[in-house]
Image (tube, rainbow, N blue to C red; front, side, top):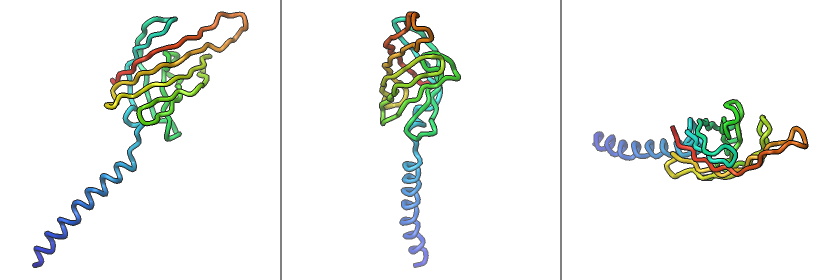
Length: 144
């Protein structure tokens, strides 16, 4: 009888512990972790044609946002801020160090291996009589 009690106890406890671990993992799962890391960017712009370079995506201190370093191949030390909403990246209008105003939007593939972005880049004037850059850019990021 004692063995039967232990057997029944284990049958009840083991699934409960397993479900609890899964629940904890779901609660602690940060969706930004799915896109964190190095990405290969292929970018098409009217001014520069097709260029290829690397970016790095990391979580921001705001739990809904990520930082994209080397955005528009400006500099590895300059990052664009983007909101991650499910599989959508939203780049709200912002000014990056280096003199560029950007905004745009993109989608993250279901397997988190590709990001398609469309954004505008506007050069901020230093002198009023200078021809300034304003263009719409299409970029595809592929997870390294």
